[in-house]
Length: 491
Image 1 (cartoon, rainbow, N blue to C red):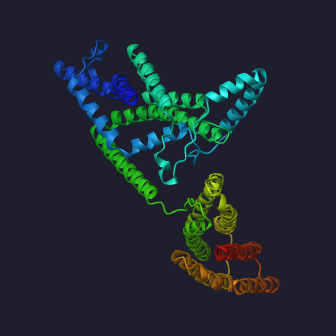
Image 2: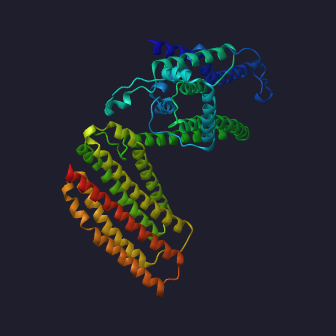
Image 3: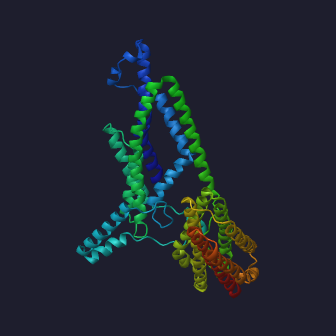
């Protein structure tokens, strides 16, 4: 009931200010047009003194505008994205953060921490303990499958957010002050989050960065709107009717483009095929669940490595840049899993603590794989980006041979983990020495060529870097296989 009444009150406050904000100017323009038609004067000589008087409200237009707002809020996925951003910054619990820290957010958090330490020394310990008790949260054992259903914050904070925002907007409306109702609501939510200790040492720097990004975005948007309005007005003044038609087509095109882009982004988010966090509480369950991540990483490793060599052979900077972004995405997903280790260990049964060691080791080897791919992709992209000489035919041929061998190995691993036939991992491990020996053989060939044929230091350096890092990549993959095979046999 509290939330329903508060939401209704906030909606009334919004309609009294925000609705008039976006429909008031078009309504005034409509009345200006009516006054000009009634006057019979030429447009260039018509005075706008009519706007000095009160502009009568049009209930029908207000109703249509309100109806459009309701429909948009109900069906627009973009509106939900905006809501997710605000809730994400004000949520009580920990989780993945949308914004990255910046210099300003670090400075604010660091300064606030020092100020808290100074004030803490002046407040009696008993008083501090009483204050701390008021912030104690009840502990609930919620299944991981229902974690997404947990509210971002409690009923008290929700009621305060609705009440304070509604009152502030209503006061501004009574004073005839147009304001950004979104800005008011957002800042109230951030204020209650700070007061409710939703921003701890683990999340403060990310949340503060998010607040600064949102506020900065509003100011930047206002500045761009101001400049754009002036430019478009001048274009319409010069071009008249044709300019209006062209600008309308451009606006429609931009709207369609943004709609398609946002739809693709939403679909990609729903069909996310990235790495998954383990939710099992047993060793056997962890081994089974981790199979998906291993298969996923191996598949992406195969594609990235092949694309890098393809980009190098054809001097395609676009392909290399795409591969580099693919590695960055993979590394970010692995880092997200590493950040979840604390909650993973907390979730384990007492009898399954050994599973935590297995899980941590697996993530370490996945990190090694990502680091090797990162090194190879960056060095290759830098070489082509700087317009250095392409690798020689023999070098490309040897790298292609390594890619074929490694590709066959990775495909075999992917099949094993997709079908969860872990007993077959031994056949993969047995190929380790042959693959490493093949890479070492090509290193020796390049050493011989360098002494007799090679004339490009950059090519030689890049080739050695790729071969040596490929050895590290194979070693990391084999370490991963050995750890998985040994843990599977023990379980």
